Image (cartoon, rainbow, N blue to C red):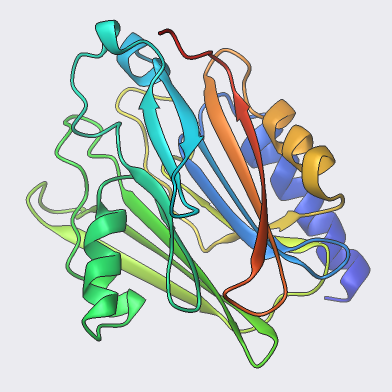
Length: 249
């Protein structure tokens, strides 16, 4: 495909998987904005009151975490409160759960991102058995490197996970690659079954955050964060955060 055909494909993916889809679940997009700056987008959605009782906040270390909007209403924090984005030696690690900490700890001991991801299993939340998704963006020799992975329930056993890993060696300005936890709404929720989806990154900073935030179903969306980096890692960073709820003191 030429670049115009890829842009059309990315736009079609954006509308089908996000705009026209009431529940893609949690999602990761990594790519480059129109100026070539690496960007990372992560969002969370929720159908239950416990899942919706969350917001994003920045950590002192320059990462991103989920926390309860109203701690008095928090029921089970085990699968919903976690470090979502953590800075690594050469970039940023993002996941949809507490495996952010596990993967980064193993990477610091010498394992690669993909080796660490192979130790992960899907979430223990029947009947959905939500996939654990993760992404790593690094800058090597001034080139953005993207790695995305998903650990989902085996087709044959709820005790075992299939781990699907994707290494993306190149991405052009104005494009990103996306994985989500689910394909669509359902009962149980069907987990994501696709190669990473090409997505359009047509704008920058606040406008880009608004574009993806507004694409998500307004009833089910919970929070979205956009990280833009400039320069080689450790890079200067800029965050944009959208929360559907405000913190209750």
